[in-house]
Image 1 (cartoon, rainbow, N blue to C red):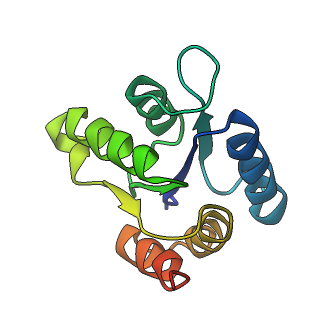
Image 2: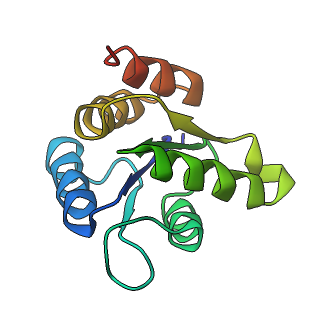
Length: 128
């Protein structure tokens, strides 16, 4: 059975990489995890292309949950989801959750074989 993939999207490449590394250390390799951060020029920001590539790296037949840090990351993630092929679009969600804590709890939930809906709901329970 496939586990839900996790994508971490941050304006900072270092934050994205660090959060991804933390998830890896906590759940191992049982969950597909990818990250992207920064704009195409290497500065702070996010890019739709980078997010789409991260979704592809974390792709799972069970779906993909995206965790974001700021509004622009959320907007670009939603654009990336809309640009996916129709057969994948419904299997990718953007979570309204704190990026680090949300990614860790989402990955932990995924590692137990939970559905995409459960992974998203569990991560979002951390939102204030």
